[in-house]
Amino acid sequence: MPIKEPSYRSSRRYLWGSFYLAWFVIIGIGLAAALGSEQAVAFAQVAVPSMVGLIVGTLGIHRFSGSMDFKAQAEAFEDRRDHRP
Image (cartoon, rainbow, N blue to C red):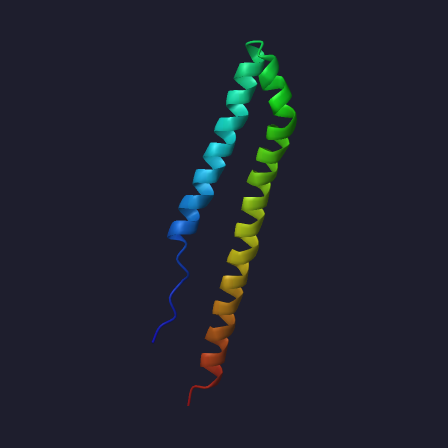
């Protein structure tokens, strides 16, 4: 049985979805603040660092867990090669 590569269809969709929504919030707050909304400026103090943290955290988790999957796949391939007659 050949080893399949990991598939990240749903996690890839969620990653890109949260990435685009976070940037949408950041850009929306920036535009509202540029148009003079005091509420947008007050909200930006909390929202912008949170959105940047969401973007960085999501990318970091995806990279970390993805690399572990590929490591496990490589180890499984080595184990199978060692047991061949």
